[in-house]
Length: 230
Image 1 (cartoon, rainbow, N blue to C red):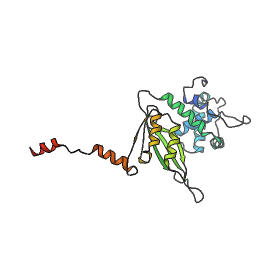
Image 2: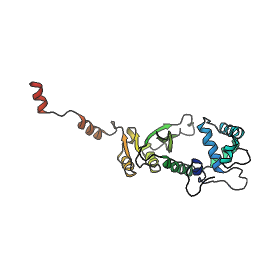
Image 3: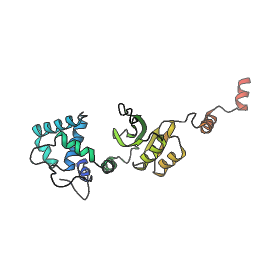
């Protein structure tokens, strides 16, 4: 069972995610539902029906695993249960627990690489609603997304990046991204959090680009000219 004082496993952290549901009629703990969903997604299931089928398969072939997740009767959540839970789940609470778990996994001797990038979700737009644009922070060492932020239609990724960086562990990390993130306030947030940054510089920062080019261009040298004439 989970250690409430000092969580260690991912399941321990999932037990600390706030449950929004009423106690009446609750058949499965939120941590059990989330743990089954995590396992199913890691095994390639991408739909609620697929997650529910994976849970039933787990109960059939590995019933001892269900007991470790707090399910004693051998039953698993159905498709509707996953739908209801994910519809009302507090994403912020879940993300905080996953980030806490990630911090515990980090090797202090290795600087994690966090890559920021924004993508518009295919098929998310319609004539009534604009397509959803998500900004993600991907950790290469963890091989997963640490956090995501939705970018509104009237803002660019800079505002989303400021919110994103506020909620992820930056100490000792190297944050990378394309030219749009090459902004003073974003760089300051990374440094203030104890990390370093590596951003591309393009024509969106003409003065900075010119300064960088000036640093790396060949300087005139009288010694070079004397050597050429010798």
